[in-house]
Image 1 (cartoon, rainbow, N blue to C red):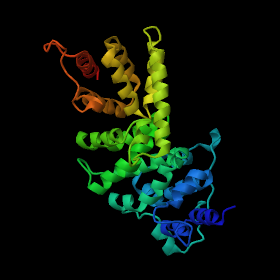
Image 2 (image 1 turned 90 degrees about the vertical axis):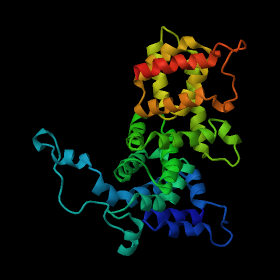
Image 3 (image 1 turned 180 degrees about the vertical axis):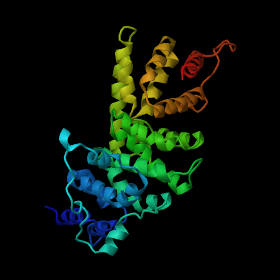
Image 4 (image 1 turned 45 degrees about the vertical axis):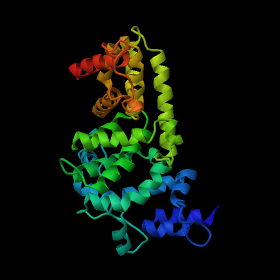
Length: 347
């Protein structure tokens, strides 16, 4: 029954500009410079979060329809009426009407000739609201649309600083909010595959340095949204439970389960697996055999996690690489070396 929230929701639904819709939170005693009303509303009210996701989809719709081929309408229009297909009725498609004047609509939507910098600057605030609140997890179609549009805008070989920040802050962390969805991982990999490994590993490193699972809460200032931390904690619980049940008899079933868990949070999964391999070298070949089910993005993340582990992990190189005799390699290093050889021989 809060009138300010209802006003914000109504402005978002009619397609008002973002600065106009969020201006209701900073008038009088409603908010302050530190208060982000849109994030709070999207966190507390599911309908408001869905409305903001719809607002973002409408904003990118013109550029998306021009740059990304949508095969859905083509398949529907090619249906044979004799085989039960439905003919498309004439007239103007629904959804092209608005209560707002045309200049405001043009200000809200991205032009067809938009650039990656314009997209990141325009959508930074609304995406921050739906990512920080976790509302985007209810709309995987929006995430796929963003990935496909950004794929057409990302140049080969590298990105500028603003685009790097946009991908690191929004697109890469969002994958954690879609559990067990390989399609999300594939869409994100279609973008990251165009970038050199230094940039990709920078994305993975920023997520790891911000803390994994409960460790992300103890960092100050907290760099991860609470829904993302919750997703990482749940992933960590699932992967440790699965590893406890792993044996030679059920390696196929448990391997598929591990691969399914790794689709959304590969850094959490592979960090945990490598920690187990450092102590139990009999897991090496079994783990390598299970990776045939993981996505390409997960394999790339595993390469990063392996480099971090070989460098000493969280100890930042402080671990001893030799046994007490000073001649032979330490157990953890020897196990990781064997794993690296087996992994890169197979993949």
